[in-house]
Length: 84
Image (cartoon, rainbow, N blue to C red; front, side, top):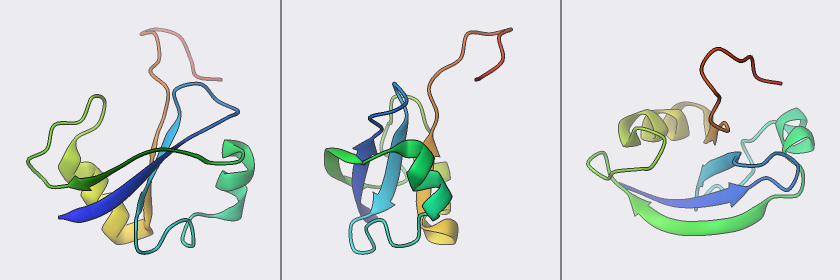
C-alpha cells in the first residue's frame, strides 16, 4: 500500500501523474515536468494492488512508483490514430 498524490496536467488534457506522497515530485524528471506543465493536485488516496483504477492497473502503478518514483497516465487514444 502507498499513499499517492495524483496531479493533472494543465497542458495536456487527460494526462495524470501519480507520485508517492512521501516523495512528491522529487524523482520526476525535469523534462517530464516541463512537458506536463504546472502540476495541479487532483486526488490523494491509498493505493493497494487490489484497488480498481479507471484507466490503469494498480499493480503496474505501484511497480512504477517503486522503481522510478512516478507513473504517467497518458490520455486515451482512438484506436488507429497516433498520439501527438
